[in-house]
Length: 377
Ligand SMILES: [Zn+2]
Image (cartoon, rainbow, N blue to C red; front, side, top):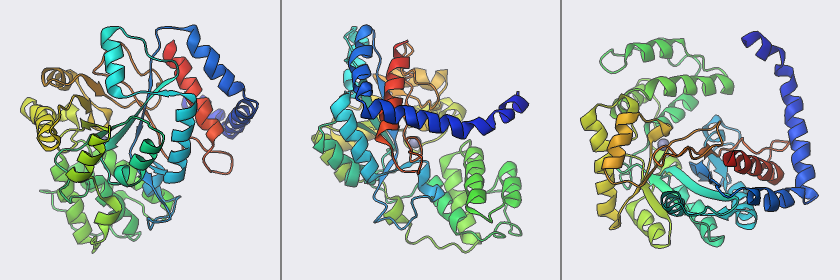
């Protein structure tokens, strides 16, 4: 298997170029628009493509390079986000998650080319940049906030880790003392092994560490990252402005203007490894906490990192949510008959590139058309 995959790897750039040429051809000849008009009307039991974003960033104001591994995976440049929303407003029916839930529950029809916009984690840039653009194009959206972090001034552990890795020198982790009481064995081993010489090394180090750490309690992760920063002499005083999360004031202002607020739990743990009581705390208590702060019912949940198990799903249903979203980057099928397992497609800084690395509206349009069509099958 691996050998045959490797054998065809050289064709990847060719596939990328061909796809780009097809997208440009379809977009600029108007065929894309025609296909969007005709194809979704051939079928009545339509589904919606649910997109999820994390951060929308004005790179001229953030002291990071656009190509930095920090943001290429989760940060969409503000000008690209605006082009995406303009395209969607013109060519798709953007509906809210609640409208989708109503249509799915009551057997109502979902409009053709339906798209739903969601945001995970509740970064402040959702308010500063995304909100204005959503408002400009009259696009409904849902922001899933981490209840225990909104307005707390705290920074998420994975953002602190990014910063620590970015600032660490190549030998930083080689000879440091890592107490077993703080660092579980697999993480200690990985830290000693990590290479940090190039941006590529750092990117892979970040990926390895986050995939190991996210199995642990977020508070333990916070402890590890704070300790690691201290041990390598990494001062992080300027972190809040780059990684700020929403305040309750911002959440309320957006909510009053029609943005839906959903729960992304209290602390963003991996729900598949949480015991029963903790699951209740994360799922049920986060709903109550947000409801107290915004004075409105909270019916929408996004599982942290899209991960859930049967128990988490049952507690979600019992807690009174009407819909819960997972994350599924490879499958465009957004609805499998289960309102508590809605799949979403992640939008990042890499997904819709032209051959020079910039954002391509034609690629965005083609992929949206593709997802709309596959989700009808
Ligand atoms: Zn998340």
